[in-house]
Image (cartoon, rainbow, N blue to C red; front, side, top):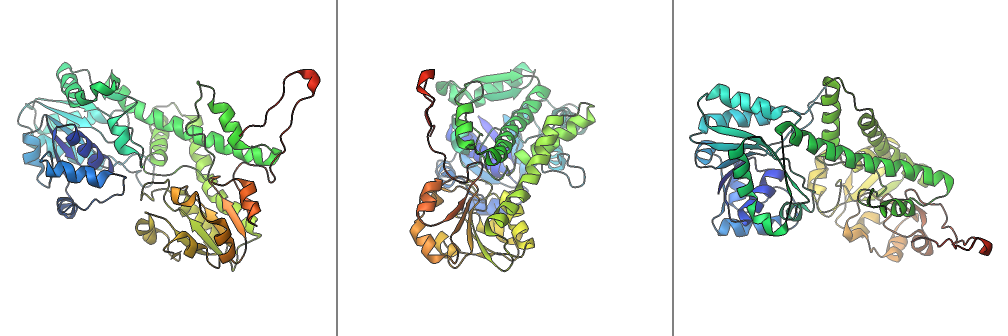
Length: 454
């Protein structure tokens, strides 16, 4: 099929490259001519594992191309995907749909035959109706259908998610449009990926509902972690005990410094605003948003307590991106943590395997190191903020020898407390007892031993 992807950012580039890898002919269009020229030269504007090789191979095979001329690309397309940004609007938190509507106007002027216009961007309920109205207003006689096809990609695992999805949601009530979308995703037939066809508004809401639920799971286990610290329980064992229940599942039950990234913060906020406009406030989601915002700054206070104050001290921070395997700094917990440490008088030195170029303009006053050991040298404390694989097997003895003070604050629970203490660190983690609990068994008369977890 001939597919046009409007927008060559994270969603557009990953989706376009994967669809080309299925065998479709994909043209990625972007109004940013510098980005288009960079992509033509093989420069990938984002970090996503294996994306550079996927793009290069499909360009070489002639299935993937990059242009700035939207009109020609749309004229030949069977389906046009809108994959532009929908950031939170300043002032009120609603999703900024200006890029979506601008794309719709440009598409409308270029339509020449029946075309399926697909909103791939994450958009509030009713956006598809407005896109259809815009196109109809500009070209009343155009043959087209507007479909919602939300993405469910995890940064750092986006290619795998696209090629082996849990589900494909298609929002349309137009039989011709449904047939086109089934043909687009026909290469996934062997993977038996379920295609859920719904109304357009249902598809739009499904994306927001899914992200809000996952954000709620993260926030719930983070609050459980705070309780665990006060009562002497272990949040990792609590999470495992919960996750073994198939109704709950273990994913997103990992305590830490709060969620960030390009999706959860803006999508939960947009859902809250949509619900308020509809007169159905979502109190649970509102609380999730508030608790998560407070938690990030609270992690800075946790570090300050572990250090007995940080004024005049150097704090080394490992990991700046909101999660591993991405260079995305959007709403990363590190931003609030570093700011909190600086406000308390600390000098902050940081290292991240991929995110430092993105972090530099966002973190004024931070010294950036070339590797974890240079970051820790002479520091009064070391803080793990993002759980990159490169931080999972650090030489603790070497770190201890190079630091001014042996304080390790592990906000991702990467290390076992006993291992850190064995190497002489004063160790602080999230949701675990200050000292490891001894395994206990129930009295023999009860007949059923309690086995220590983990």
